[in-house]
Length: 487
Image 1 (cartoon, one colour):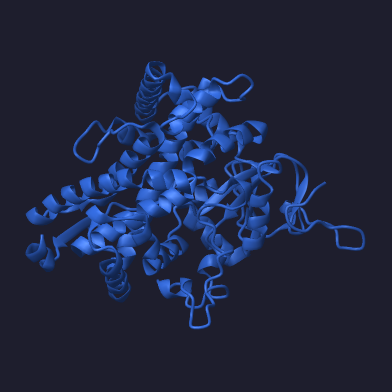
Image 2: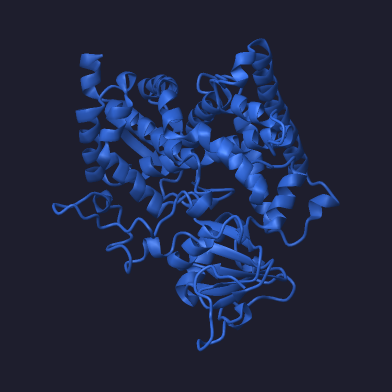
């Protein structure tokens, strides 16, 4: 038996069993499933953490799950991937049924290592810096779109527009394709991702896989979305292969990540085949759309509710990066307070507030025995919003991420892990942070934010699909007065 945190040895108390831990009382057959709401399952689990502590069992039907909310134990589990833990096999099966996400997101073991090396090259900082002018180009499209809304006094569907922004960026960087959904281009990818992502999460915790026996209208709609996404991915791969056939030198010097994946797959003994290429295309679209778009939405929402923080961020942007058309990497690097705002938004509103995993061997989490095949539910937002780890933890305070006069930073960066931790840390972290910074800097420099609100005007609820998003938000902007005078 190996360990994920602390393993009992001779002279120490024996390991506890998961079933011996105190937790919410399960009902016959359904376990705790009827005690949670799918769209807020993360909040229900977090509420139980406050009652039962950082380790307790829940039951999805008859399946026992160990909830782990202690940040040190969670970090140890994440470091033990991919050899000690994997994504749940039920999620992998659901993904396969839906056309598959056989890319880096679902890959395990040697397959994951082969693909990780390939994908990391495309998302390395030097590759992202080379792509920076294209990032700014997409941001300027969004700016033109929002100029029109601001001039007309029209509310902006924040989620929809930010997803267009992120899809356009990832399609250009990874696939060399200018899809331009912002200016009204074909948004097939975005529309169908909106059906696929929540379905993966919903089916992964379903009590019974009814869809394998009977199709409801939502399942037939999902099948159409899966087929449409597969067609779109095949077109992207076909276009890339055509470019490489016309210019054989691209195999040695790929112009984008998709071409690099195809070149790698074509090498004898690469361990990467066309199916993995298609899976990674889907994975990048899935992972690159909702996560970044929702983080930007939450950040704008929080800034609008904290005028002092928003003004401090705007003052910094106007000092260092007042014109989106002239944005540079150096300007983005200078936006330290805005970066602190991003970190604080991800602490309070992480788009991935939990990670479910499955043990690949007998192990221990803290002093709890975890058998091969057992499920663990890693809660990523517990200590990160606890006063014991962050003073005034409920407050939005970006200052905690900045050094004080002595150079010390109050925030403990080890407590929150918005991009995961260990070997499987998100490879797109640098790109995501840059996308967020560019979009928000553009907004702060050019507009006054009149409102970021729900239809009812009430506080935005958190909605759990594949990732955690705010309920539908409307953004209302006004062009800043000085812009009318200076262009």
